[in-house]
Each structure stands twice: as C-alpha cells, then as structure tokens.
Image 1 (tube, rainbow, N blue to C red):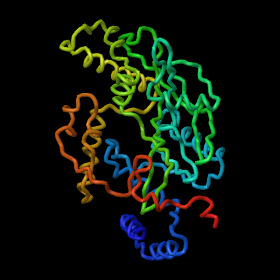
Image 2 (cartoon, one colour; image 1 turned 135 degrees about the vertical axis):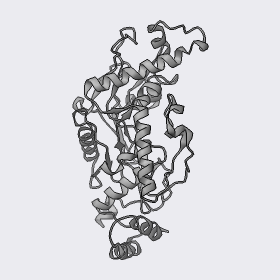
Image 3 (cartoon, one colour; image 1 turned 135 degrees about the horizontal axis):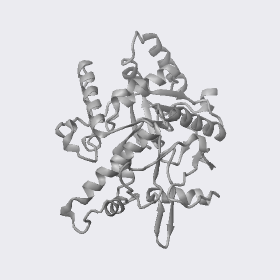
Length: 357
C-alpha cells in the first residue's frame, strides 16, 4: 500500500519520477518508510490545500509557503518554529498563507496557535467558552491570565510524555479592535480579534506519509469572526448586545433583529480589519474567488470536491453560487485530516530518531 500511495502522489508532480520512485521503493524495503525532500513536501502541502473539501479559499493554493521544521529536536526548537511562523504569516497585516511541518515527535494540544482563554465566574463565562478546557489545563501548568474577555492562551506542546507551556510574545500576535464606523455596537466594551487563523490540530497526508503536526493558516473570511466566533450562542454570543445597541426590537423573532444585528457586526469586522490594514475577505468575494477556482480546476481536467455545508458562508448563503451547487465529498489525496484521522496513521513520516538511523 505504501509504495502505491507514493506512486499516486509522485504521478501528480511534473517530470519523470521513475528514478525517484525506485529510490523510495528501496528506502521502504530498508526502513519501512521513506523521507520527502523539502521541495516534495512543499508541493504535497499545496496539493493538500487544493484538495481540502471544506475550504472556500482554495484559489490561492499555489501561493502557500511551507516551512520545513522537521529538524526540530527540542520543545524550544518547536516553539521557535511556531513563533517564526506567526511572525512570517502576520507580515505586518498583509497575511501570508503559511504551513509549518513539525516532526511527529511533537504536537500541539491547542486547536489553533491563537485562541482566547475562558474563565468561569458567578456571573457566567468571561472569554471564549470554546477554550474552557484548554484554559484549565494551562492554569494547572502554572499559567495565569489577566481574566479579560480576550486573553491570548499560551501554547501547550507535548512529546507524548510531558507537556510544556509557552506564552506567545506580544509581537507574534496581531489583534484588531472591532469598531463600527457608524454605531457603538458593544455599549462601550472592547471587542477584538486576532489577525491570523492558524489551525493547529490537523494532519497532513502526502504519498502515504502522515505528518501529525502541521500548523497552517490562510486569512479570515469576515463571517468566521462576525457570524461565528463573536455571534454563536456558545461562543461570545454578542448578537443580543448588538441588537439592543442598535435599538432593534429584540422581543420577537419576526422583527429579524438577529439578521440585522448580524449584518452590522460583520460590517464592523470588515471595516475594522480594513482600517487596521489587515487582510480579510468578505463572503461574497470569497465565493466569487471559489468560482474562479472551480473554472481553473475544470480547465485542468480535475473535479472540484467539497463539503457543501462548509463551503456555504454562514450569512446569506443563498446569495452565492455555492449554495446552488452540488459538490462531491470524495477525499482526494494529498489532503488534510482531522487529528488522528490520517488514513495512513500506521505509516507515519520518520521521527527524528529514525531519520538519524
């Protein structure tokens, strides 16, 4: 199975790969696995983004920067690679799509490189309820936040035997204060969000190899922040506050106060990121970009696979072409998978000890 998976991947690369596949077959016979070069890793990661069924931003798959950090040997090495990732990706607000491939010896307990903490109080939860478990774990390891609604969580890195905690330096986390140009949506409260959506809990499969720690980011679509993170009832749940601040009748649903509040909250997100000079895309533009991606793939003779429920935006989906299309949810490799979901989990990329041998 392993050599067949390798052949499938290398058949997607340019040029004659016969000699390279012969090398790989011998390496598999000798060691039970094989090693990708940095160039092969980069091409595979780009293809994985192109094949990601849940992502509407795939038009830009060829622009992904892949940082090969497989040589990291210590917790400090891993942390340094992650900070370098955030600084590079942030780029002063001109966000760059970036992936860092770490050795399989390490992984992050965080679901994203940047998340806000959550604290239980007598008056309810302060912060992001999604982070309650991670916050408690960080506190057990000695971390203490300022107990505001937007405390950046530290990174928790494990090698399978122990967990080490690292706080993110201020210069690695760019944040944007969310303010509407025409209304005070939050009754004087400070609301903000971070600039880089760096996923940290997925695995990358290339040619039968599984890389289990591959933090990666694109840039935000505004609805991820304004229609989900800040609006969901199990997250910051700001729509009632926004509706009241706008003077809307929130006593009954038929006034559509939620919809009106949702639009202005998303407008505020777009205005704020634009004002701060930080890359963001609105959901209508993202859908049009995805339509261009579909055309490019059609011209290349490839079917566009996708998960419809993830591709449609969470606001006004019927106003985009995506809503009216059907997508085949077949998994094409290389690809990205949820943690422990890699189909070749028993055939992982070499650990650093094996590579040295």
